[in-house]
Length: 296
Image (cartoon, rainbow, N blue to C red):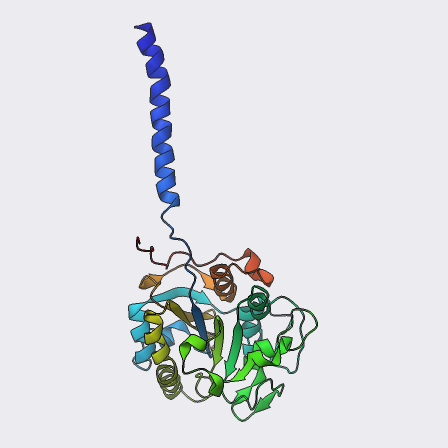
């Protein structure tokens, strides 16, 4: 009887330990590995709150995307006004800018330089930019305050070549020729910035469908991703904005993870194993929206 008692004393704790290990291993495996999209296109819209966009009849195309893919219910801009939000999305920092002044030159880490340093590619496409590499502050409906990458153009440190600063007319029709990551900025009418609602929302929604829906359809068969986000709200909802991730690797749903521009930047960096820029180093990547890869 004594040896049975000794055996029971040894075996039961081992069995309990094995069960605990098995449960923790299963829990730890619930988060699928991050995908690596062939291409990401991120579109930045302007000055509208979450409630003005999601479930709005004035944005039928955006809501079609939201119903089929991932939308974040707790997404927030960094500050006001526009320019520091764009800088945060691109570099993890507002760079100390608190207004829409122009011009500026920065030498800090940024998404574009991180991609190029990793042997990948980047380009920003601004509607109505007058020419490749233009440094102009404003012309027509183009405004440099909505073009963050130009502020690193030709900088000695963390700089970007002028060929990454492109007009929207350079956006390729053959999507296989897209850079690894592209940022698309419509002009100040088509991004919902100018004009009164509901017309401003309707215009931006229509522009997005006309210019990016073909890419969305192509992306479904070509392992690529669309991100649509806003810089800020209209100072009405604590800077709450809509952010959507659209692609074949995305699990559809409404997600309540609290995210900011830093989390979006961190996620793009982690999808490609890049170095982190600014506050993205301390931001959590988005991990819950990805589908579990199917077995080969």
